Amino acid sequence: MKPRQISEEEEYNLIRVQTEPPNKSVAPVAPIKRKKPVFVKVPLHLAAVVAEATDEKGWLVWILILYRCWREQKHTIALPNALLHQHGIGRKTKYRALKRLTAYGLIEVKWQTRKNPIVTVIL
Image (tube, rainbow, N blue to C red; front, side, top):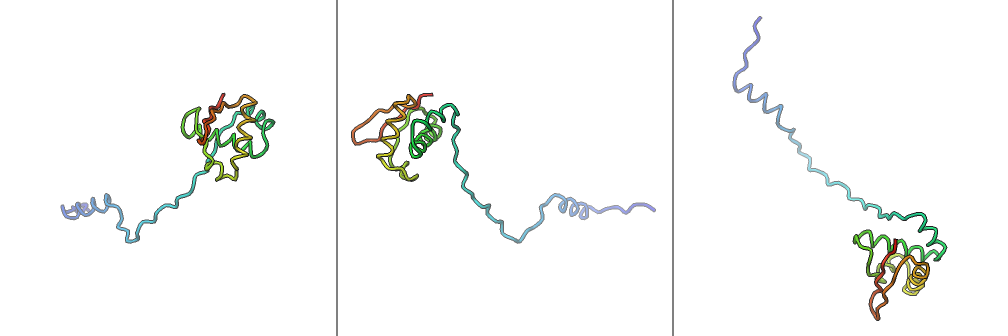
């Protein structure tokens, strides 16, 4: 028996079926957007010094300073009260923590009247 010959129209249909994606009548579903966790790397030897230098809220001030430095890719940043307020830190706690961190030589602070302090991280 000889194999049956395929006509041009049958060959076209065969190729079309193999190359075209299936026709889906269902609308595509948008992917769920999840918030990515925010993190910062902290050198352990500095973490020990900071833990000794500050209380819990002061520790969080230090972490937020490091995060902001990483985010802006700078060693010198402005430290607004609004950023700290989002994490439950008041302005007086911020000032105490900045003074303690300065005393331990971890940061330098340029104090400005009625403006955010400019903080430089010393690594």
